[in-house]
Structure formats: C-alpha cells, structure tokens
Length: 356
Image (cartoon, rainbow, N blue to C red):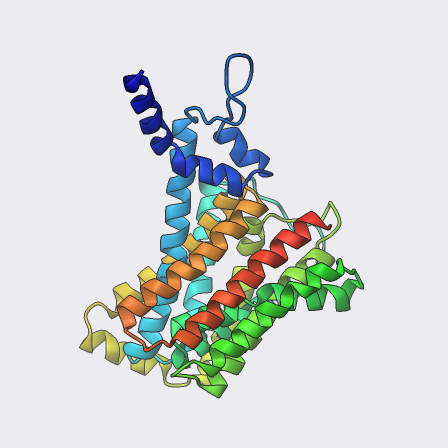
C-alpha cells in the first residue's frame, strides 16, 4: 500500500547515514558490531536494522570530541603563535607535554582509564626516551611551522605522513609493499607539490619545518614498532604518553630557556596586557592532552580502518574551519593540490589493506 511504501521510504532516509558508514567500514568488525546488519529468514539481505543506539551515540560523541580537541589545539596553536604575539613554540610544546604528564598520571593512576603498564627494564626506558626525543622534534617542528604557514597548507603537508612512513619502514626493516601500494603514494607527493605552487603565503622555512615535523612523526611510528616490538615491552598509546611526557618536559625546559631566553618576561607581559592569556595557555595545553586521549578512545572503540577514514575527513574539516576563522587566502590550485594528496592517502590506505 501507499502508506507502507511511505513508511519504508522514511525508514530508508532515517538510516541512510548508517548505511553509508557500513559501506565505508565493511571490513571493520568492531564498528559493524555496533551497526548490526539484519539477517535470517524473512529479512532482505544487507538491510539495515536499528543499531545499538547507546553504543553508536557513544562512538559519535567520541568522534566529535576527537575532532573538536584535535582541530581545536591546531587552531589555538596558530592563534597563539601567529596572532597573539606568543612566538615561543618550544615553550608552548613544553606546556603541552606538562599537561600530558599531569593528566596522564591522573587518568591512569587515579581514574584507571587504562591499566597502568610499568617500565620493566633500563633498556625499555632508554627506548621510550629515544621515542620521546623524536616525538618532541615532531611537535616542536609542527608548532614552529604554524608561525609561518596557514593551517590549510600545514594540513596539506601533514597529509604526506604515509609517504614518509613507507620510506622509513623500508629503510629500517627492508619490508616491501606491493608496487601498486607505492604507486598510490605518487599523488600524495604530487598533491603537496601542486599545493605549494598555489600557496599565496608560502614560506620556505615554515615549509621545511612542517615537512621535518611530518617526517619525524612518521619516523616515530616506525621506530616505535621496532623498539617496542616484543610482547614484554609493548605499551598502549596512553601509557607511552605517560612515560614520554615527563622526559619531553625535561628536554624542552632547558631548550626553551636557552633558545627562547625572554619567554618568561614576554609571557608575564602578555598576561598583564591580555587577561585571558593564562586561560588560553591552560586551555591549549589541556586540549593537547584531550586530543591524545580521544584519539586512543576512538581507536579502541572502532579500528584502524575507521580511524583512517575519520582522520582524512578531520584534516579536511580543519582546513575549512581554519579558512573561515583566519580568512587566509587560498587558491583553486592550492585546494586542488590538497584534494589530490588526500585522494592519494585514501588510495594508499586501501591498497595497503587489500594487498598486504
């Protein structure tokens, strides 16, 4: 009847978004458990039924927090470093690491967000310290680049992380991927070249620092897989952050005092001129920890595949929001280059999954 057809159309509209997610994450077991597919007798194959609403809404809430904190810390970094007169990326990174150390301790030791994993040997500690040094380099480099580059271009360069990961993985482990996987990296690099040519605010030093930060981030992930590969030494990301953060603070504090000698005086002066200076620094630092925590929780409740899809979308959202807020000029060539890079990243992830 017409009424039943109308109800069916409304039902299809209601679950259109959920069906789309199922197509994207068709091989994601953890999320597919949430978005249950109807089966059995009397049902049409592949038809969506009502999901576990609480679990699904919880995942949506986590993703929203992840997007908000991750994009928020990037925008706050840009605002502080470029628009607010706080030109101290090393000290800012130290504030981030201090917050991560404090909040990690509270969340793991007191709130038991994850079970605490203890450091079992001097060798394991030295490996974590090595990772902390590389981690510091990537974060400091990224913050320095934000002083000179627009967030949109910064995100375009940052999207090339898979390229550097593939290079370092091959150099460190001699592990080869299928040729089609490497072919998918061509548009990743080509897109950044195109975006660089079309970037009105291109800055050589900022570009070099952003590229270095991206390479360091990729190197850290490869190094982590090598150094903490044994079962007895593996740490989840939250415990790793718990131990890396204090080491990073110890490294960054003298570096900030030596390389940014007037940071304390300028910070106090800005605090007198702008009453929200202290609030911004605290908010920025807390948001940096929230980005790490929500990234861990989203990964835990979905999977690497879903995280990759959401991560690609997050970069695009960050670009749009930054352009709306900072009004930085963009060109069709620049945005086209970024689009090519993102498509290359998506293709790389898909080919790596299919041909592993």
